[in-house]
Amino acid sequence: MKQLLLAAIAGIVMLSLRAQEPVSPHTFTEDFNDSSLRNFRYGSTGIKDAYKYRAGAASQAEPGTKVLLFRIDPADSAGPGRGPEIISNNFTHFGSYSARLKLPQVKNVQPNVGAVVGYFTYHMDSIQGLSEIDFEWLIADPSIVYIGTWTGFEGKLQRIGRTIDLAKGRIYYTISKINYNGTPATLTGLQDQPETIPAIDGFDASSKFYTYGFDWYPNRLRWWMIDPATGKKIVLWDYQGSTLGIPQNATQYRMNFWHTNTWPVESNPKSVEKPTSPYGLEVDWMKYEPLGMK
Image 1: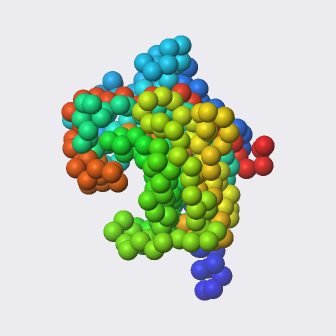
Image 2 (image 1 turned 90 degrees about the vertical axis):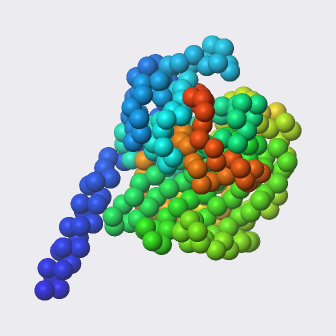
């Protein structure tokens, strides 16, 4: 009986691993210069409007640049995945991720809009649980960035997160919690590095393109962006000292843009309005470099 039980468990694990194959072993960059995608597929569980997504579009912010253009549909209901989204064809795992993008400008049009840009990884595995690493922006205030992870299973999801106003150099919090409505616990020590972030003069993620990235290791996560003045990396969060909240299983690489009616930006509690216009997100490129390929 014990042998049968072990064999069954092994079979379930193998099925789970096969479901995640193939994991991309190579570095790739999607430059969005063409109308077709090489490393990603389009996905949206919302309204199937063609204008929500276009690759190879001419950037309105940077003449001569071709981009992935996401437009939010005002008719879409609230919720992640309802808006435009791209999902990597293959799974990805430990390594370095980076992207260059520009948020839509809405402050003079609809300052209380509730809309999220997500640059992230995501996959829920029935055996190993959730593997998610995030960069998120609530476009009502493009000076604030949300970074963190989700791991675990529905009903007991583990969150680690940090929220930063990059224009002011202000860290709102660095926390751990269980589930979306859990009580936050402040992280300290190696889990809270750096403890301060320099202000980026005039930072506004909707004013021009910026490059953001994260480095994912089995025992460490580091989120960063490129300083437009120096070209050097600014480390936003270097999470070490614990494996709590660090995903261990393979995932899929993604970008999306969606309406939220429950999550206001830190600086504006009214910012949950349904979008009134098809605001546009521009993505210049996305890159993945597996661990050990540098």
